Length: 335
Image (cartoon, rainbow, N blue to C red; front, side, top):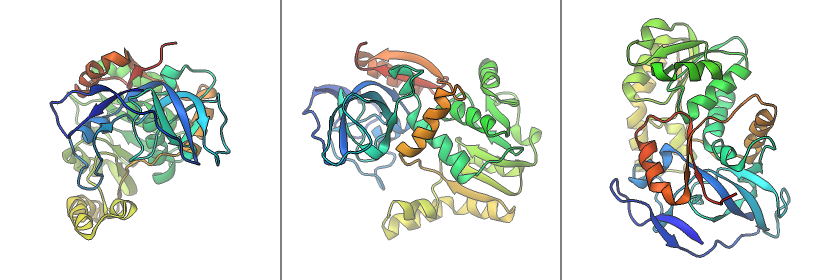
């Protein structure tokens, strides 16, 4: 099969098109013919080796964390799916590789594709929608009437988080550029902060939850807008001791991670605020819940641009600019 690979960690190297063996399915896996994938910042972070200390990958490596496609083979113990099922999902860490024509995926990492959207739009959801779910539903336990500040509302996670938080009955504030103001309002944002001309920490107050996706300076400012007992959930770091425990890190990595987040945890604790780091985990079960919301029209795809499979490096460059609205999709199987 055709796949795009990297042979080392590098900022400069392009993804290389290669012929690689088609994956063999294990007992609890299905083989998916991939119709479409999408690009996430996580792909860049892995490509340059940002996580190599605690998430070492072997080379050659096929990147790609989102897929939508058709099941063409099933393992002997698979019970949830059958050949011909149209699915979407986010493969588990160390089992990624959706920049390819086929992938073997554990059945628990997949969900049936919503009927009302195409493969191309379906692949824009898994990683960002599950991230938003785990941040807002699981960690924040966001309730009707509460107030949440979602940073970078026009990004992949932001566009999903705004829609989900609004569905749950929260008041939603977000930050974006003036050019994307109408987009985030259309998704449900009640308060829109122009990050280029406004300081959110002087405008927002008494918030219950902050979903942080920016740098440490922005994270520290976020503490100022939360009420005592509030929660700040960061998907951009710094990682906390709970995360080190989750990944079964060595004692030295646990120590490093603890030191990285020590300052923000102390600042949050002094204000009576809970700080936690979220590194999303694949979940076909949660994606099924999200699929119901997609089918009901509650959550809609936000896709900036579609690229063909042979344009994948162009697509990576486009996403790396950091100015995309929603997601960028790679069409792998021609319709």
